[in-house]
Image (cartoon, rainbow, N blue to C red; front, side, top):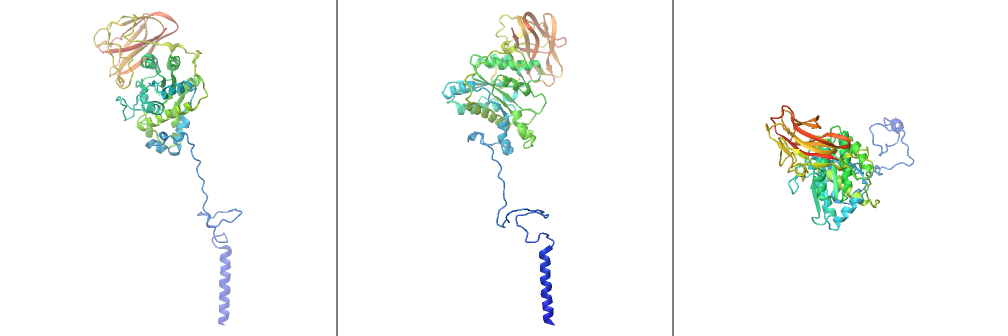
Length: 466
């Protein structure tokens, strides 16, 4: 009897083992395959050869970013902003470099520097070019922004000692309309070899701004010293970016171009960085932002030098992009070069004038204007000249009470210009008063508006085209 029980027990154990092997809760039959890591059973796992338990899980290596910088340590990510960009860091440069243009003039100027000859680099723009937002300082005591930082790169890489000179001609809050007025005095008077132009966040889309921006480009390209002209487009959070008309002008004249705005577009869209990583306000880069901007300019310089396809660059007189050739030859008038044009000064007196950026950059235009003291009368400043256009630059002061100047052309009131308003900061304001297809003889009178006699007012300069 005991033998029968033992035999039945063995049979039962054998049948139980078979049942577990054929259909247990696993549903897979044999021992689970070790490389299937899943909480839910994976159906239809097809493989030609069983994978052993010792085979490692395959991994895909990310495609490495190309070396854009030829091993140059200057371009390594160093700041918090650059580090945060991570794998998108290189795309700042590939997106931001819009064109190396015809690099012949630039290469020629940098070759001079490499040979020990003196060259002058000039930056013309607004507050971003002035260095606003940076906490560092240049040896001159100015704010050290992208302009000085990129100058240092050019000086150290292409210069010999101190033969590369720096001029910052920026004025905060100004666009190409004022740049046109002071181009001769603040830029071309230095015989610059390289000129950077940055007005993308201060210009608007007006015809006047388009005309003066292109006029600056043409004026610089025609200069006797044959400078290399480079266009820069800064970034801002507000609408009104003007790169859409500036870039076609740069393409038309085959100029090198860099855009901080375009450089930031991709990482911002991917939310890799936030605007506050770059700037503390709506437009001015922080110190880290200026450093990244400077590297983008340096990258352009190096790539332009590598492009040796152009063997000459000669400015040929040709129609402008929009048919506006008026402001190439704009002339500035101040109290040092009136040349008999100012017939009467009225209640205004010639003297030294100051404005918001005086002492913050290397500009010296607009310091020889005319001022009238409060309650000094209402007699006007009278000018006689032959011109096809006429512009006035005034200083605008911060005041809760608005005061103004009236400008008459040939006895008719043409425009009224605010000389004080809430929120102003002693900033220069340029106003186009008169423009015509052909030059003519005109009498222009500038006088305080009714009710404004009790406030002091300053005219910084005039500009006209013949």
